[in-house]
Amino acid sequence: MRDVAFGLVGGLAAAAVCLLLCPYTLQEWVGGVARYSLINLGLRPFSGFVATWITRPHVPLLLVSFAVLAGLALWRVVVSMRRVSGFQAVTGAVCLALFGFVLFRTAFVKSEAAYNAIVWLPLFAAVALPAATRWAGWIALLIALSLPVAGLSRSALLLWNQASTGPSYAEVRAVAQRHLAEGLAVSPGLFIATPDLRQTLFGSGQSYLAAARPVWFLDQQVATGRTQPPDYEGYDLVENTFAGPVKIFAMPISRAPTGWQFALYRRQGAESAEWKD
Image (tube, rainbow, N blue to C red; front, side, top):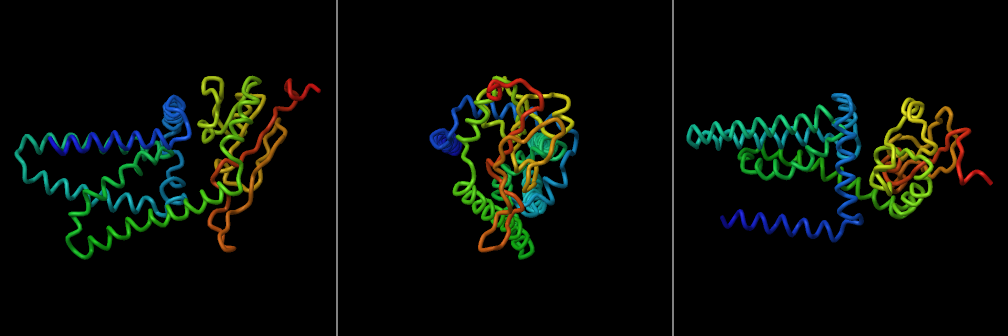
């Protein structure tokens, strides 16, 4: 009972800290999570699996880290289940199977939502730690933990670069606010910068623009992976904040920034209050 109380108090304290530090209101955060979840779960099965789990540079070889930690944690749980009664073992196996199914559905089948698996890595590591009783287990655990650390260090450098050189969240939000009433679409990664989720369209690519035909389209650079804005048929480039590769001591660590850099497009021939004069 004491452990449950400590866990509850720790969870509430962590939630309070997040609410204090988060730059967005709770309503915006909940709405953004719900909207982005629907976007991700609406993707084709296994869409972007290789890009998300193997080649994505944010966390090198993420799939290796996940597989090692999850494997050690699973082995530890199975060993522990052998020491309990039959009913408890069956109940634990059912819960474990349900957890595995949900995790596979949200993190692999819809692999663009891979963060659903990443958030469980600390738990896997905590459970796997007692399982590393031999030198091979310790080496595997060390490798699995060092890969995310390398990726986190790289992400910290990218965040520092974004804060010092790129456009701010407030600037992107102001652009979205300015064109919202005329018909605005944004690439999915900019959902949290949109003032009103109900009035905003979400999508990207030539086929989407041809079907939705918004007056304005706000495209985030990180979603394209390019150093120059793409050309979209039927749209003119109005504003461009795309930047080149990110370098630290002349060494490239990313082919494109991962922050708020954007390109703003306007549909050719569209009526716009801003362009009437």
